[in-house]
Amino acid sequence: MYAALVLTRINRVYEPEVEVVTTEQPTQSPQTETITTDVDTTDWEVYNDDQFPLIISHPESLTVDVNTELEGYYIVDLSRTTPRTSIKIFISDEGFAGTAALAGSDFITSNGYTATNYDNIIYTIKVGEYFYTFDGTNAPNLQNELAEIINTVTLD
Image (cartoon, rainbow, N blue to C red; front, side):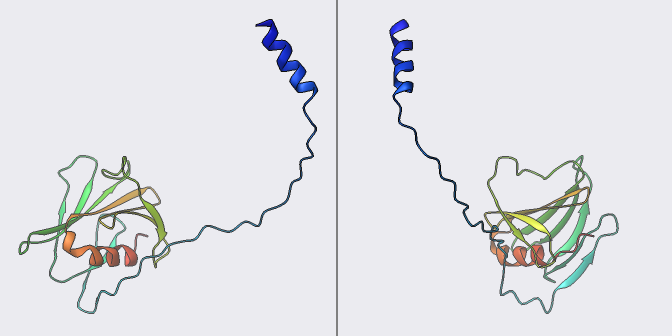
């Protein structure tokens, strides 16, 4: 032990002095991704929720229902029966629905909200006290439409 301590001190005495030169590196602001789609929205309908700040446009083939049965979440369900398809919007003041273990990428919607994209099938946006989770796992054939809904949503 004593020998190791002596060698450490000897090595420090004979270490060459190194001049540290600091140069400033130009910083770049992080790139902000956006989502663009080529979805034709001319025949889309507008849904304006009467309980929460939520205005969305959606394909006219999807009907809108509201569900409050899941504790802690207010759910807006965009669905159709043929083929069976459902996009659910979970609204809560407690947190996002089911995204804790997922890795996502942030982007800015065309309405200026910071959103997170999870594999083009789940999106999240937090505005004010509310957490919005847009879940398209039961609508894999509507990924572009879901992206357009997210991109044009109004939450204030």
